[in-house]
Length: 393
Ligand SMILES: *Cc1c(COP(=O)(O)O)cnc(C)c1O
Image (cartoon, rainbow, N blue to C red; front, side):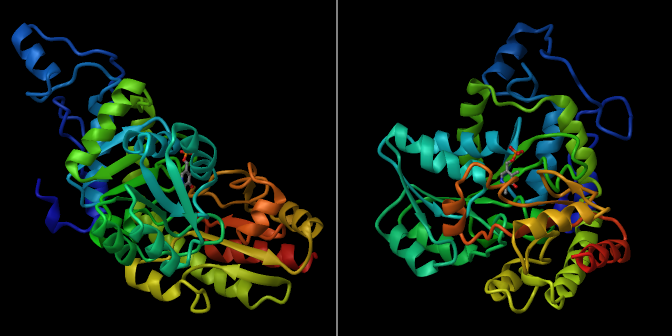
């Protein structure tokens, strides 16, 4: 099928489906077979060598997993895609596949907590040079890139303060020095933002979040230029961070409703952000859809919607956060994000639990910050819930 003529919502439903399904079934089956058998030894050999289409062993790929890989490939407008057991497996495989001893990576101070750990604690031990810049200081980023680097690694909007970086501007700078540009697109999803169209070479996702959308399966995805994806794939098929068929099915199932969910979450989040912004008990709201957000202009240029993630700080201390969060009814107080149900938590317990209070302060994360991942509930009920909890303070 030629997907180039379809809109995202159509692609999300149809891409990858039916391609490995000889049964006439209208959904991709879950193929739990570890290995795939051949009667003809020569065909087997050619498939093993990668010279012919087919499946060998599920650590490499699998019919169900490949259907999911096709979905993200087409939604991100990529030449190729591959998958991983978790989002962190996608990120660590991508970093370690390219960043061998002596290489240099430029990135942001505000990357996802786990990613930040790899930059600060692991890569330096392998003699990789890591430079993390202030996330929104584009001049500083350009200056560091111009010194020469092998990879530019971005994430936008960031976790948890929703900072926005200009992908097109920084990708251009990185390509001048021949660096590979990688963007973590987990928060935006391909419905709201396509980094490859803005100049990135690779896009990574924690499929655990919005793509799956139901908090019931973990996975990671990578899409982009074919030879770059292949490079990471070869590393992953050997180190074994592969995705299994069952979660691949769950994620692909979730992705069929991606556009519906994201449109709802975009709209609800904007309504809630405006409501909170005007509330006297709220000190600050971090949402790129608000005109007062410092990254709003860039976000407007590079995103089609502002997403379902926001954070806000109360006019008070951590005790107030505790009181407020436990008063809310329509949230799971839990880590993770991007689910059908609203999730909330303080970054000091969720995304940035690995950091010290001083490190969080350095990143501009107040201890009274609340990360709020808007679900697909009716927004009137969410607003009433927030109102009730705020009034109780
Ligand atoms: C959750 C998350 C990850 C890590 O994904 P896992 O599936 O939990 O390993 C990476 N980046 C971002 C932005 C995330 O939110």
